[in-house]
Length: 167
Image (cartoon, rainbow, N blue to C red):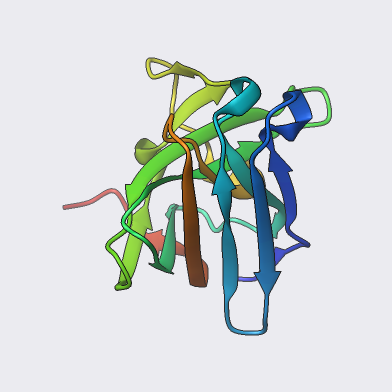
């Protein structure tokens, strides 16, 4: 499937007076998200996000997202933002994953892995996102403690798995 991921931008707790910092470096083969989370001044998160454009969604198919990461043993959030139309408010969703120190891991996500979230408040009883309506993807670290972090991503793939409704 054709996917276009735009330019990654940093969004840290400095937007609300915090002191965390992060860097994002992208090469042809990898994305590196690193920095230091600070809890000073009521801070505590660092994040990056990028716009995404997906090609047409085939009928009778479910979208899965696969990421290959090498981390530092810390817990991260994989974040999605959707917007069904220009009239709808964007909705944000998150799924957690924990990395293994200096080991490559392949992570698989489906819609049911994500819970709706708005400014740190979770809404687990709301419906799962429609992954065909993704407008942005992101990564966030917010473990309620000061810590240095480094996450390397070598692949993000969007795959349609066809099904016909029969067993």
